[in-house]
Length: 287
Ligand SMILES: Nc1ncnc2c1ncn2[C@@H]1O[C@H](COP(=O)(O)OP(=O)(O)OP(=O)(O)O)[C@@H](O)[C@H]1O
Ligand SMILES: [Mg+2]
Picture 1 (cartoon, rainbow, N blue to C red):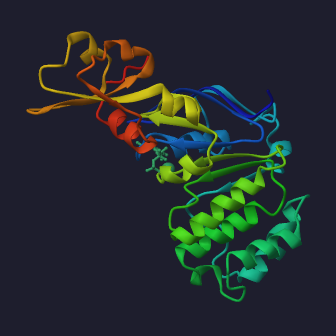
Picture 2 (cartoon, rainbow, N blue to C red; picture 1 turned 45 degrees about the vertical axis):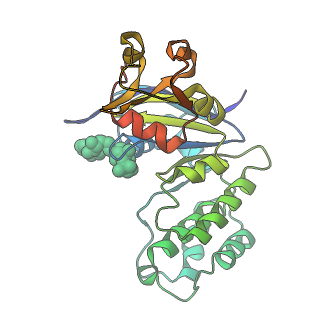
Picture 3 (tube, rainbow, N blue to C red; picture 1 turned 90 degrees about the vertical axis):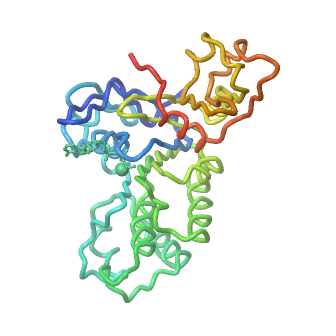
């Protein structure tokens, strides 16, 4: 399978935080959600992928090319949206295209106009006069107007209203339809990923907790609930995010360990949000 993005043992050490040998691959033609709690390392990993931050170890390949050695070649085929706008404040929406289109070989004025219209962006307003959601939409319109083969979006739906989010998800779904484009998408709105992501990477305190298909994530873990006397030693050892109260316990378990669950206990399939909450409560060991 062809990978649009391959991250291998990526490492970055800050004073109080280590991105710890992060590895994941995004196959061409798919959408990967990148999730984890605030400060887990998503933006750091994205900055390293884009060579905006120097790494301390590891390797990143984009379309099979090295992200540092072949940076110039790769940049034409990538589009990036961060949650901060990077356009000049005094530009009017209609001037943004003029200012940016010459940087990209594949710029399509037709596509850009279509996105601006679909997103109801006011063409005469200046960037600084746009609301947060309008700024996100403008960045997305630019990102999608030059035929980029890899979109890297860091919280693109934050600040968008539900209608705009819904539109955006549809547009992103359509964007990858030709099978040649891929999207890495960090977000805290996991319901968006439940809807459109094929793959999920979960990062926890700089460590990869899970990377793989969304279905394998959701089927690979179960929530276990039981009474106060049901919790055996072996089960307790395997539970992620165990919480105990006087009425019982709950925790997350790998489906492969379900043999430890007895018939009095209840098991449920978790949502992505529930998985993240259990992970945040601790009990996961990384090498
Ligand atoms: N330039 C830097 N110098 C020192 N520490 C940094 C720097 N950039 C990020 N960090 C630290 O790295 C950790 C991860 O931050 P990062 O921005 O990657 O998290 P995130 O997963 O994107 O979180 P959020 O969901 O809040 O956006 C944090 O502890 C942060 O303080
Ligand atoms: Mg971030």
